[in-house]
Image (cartoon, rainbow, N blue to C red; front, side, top):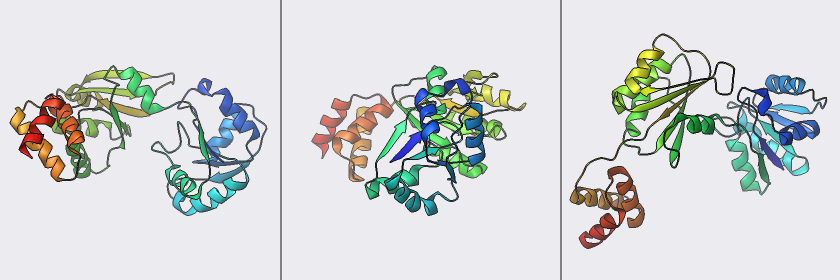
Length: 271
């Protein structure tokens, strides 16, 4: 069995009892950085010395099959450096291979920078999307943001402190300087900071330099003001691209504020 275990994102006090027990009894641990795992075992006073296997972005594809076979015979505990494995961390390819091979996968839930940032942001939490790290290159980063410019859901990003000011500047340029943004820094740690403001305001703030682990939470795009006829045209365009009429009507309704039933019924008449 493969056990995905969430580890603290900063505060050691967030370790769960289930994680402690798993660390005490695990025969094998696949870790993003084995040095971090050794430090965690020492910090928790755990005497177990499991076999440690390095599992990171550069070797996961090559090791997945081997680890899946290992998990048939023995429990395999999988750890990232912080948070839940597979969430912008190694583990996805391993889980995919395990599912294909019929090997059981379970999880020990715990700290998550994504959900913590979303919860404290004050932005809508009923629908959100996690976008991971933005591209490093400015042109690629702006291209990625342009694809999200009309996303109606709250968006969560990870970002390097060294690129934060540039990322916020690009965000202001593409989304508009008045888009609501929350920067969460050093979550659960001593110097935790949650900074709220417009994209333009936070870009100016970050220009002086920011340190620490960073999450950016961005408000979704406001509904576009279009008439029903235009909305129906958009629905039929989505249908022509392969979407179901019901789903297309729901997507356009979310993006424009038009009634889903009105769009659906009007699109039926025009088909």
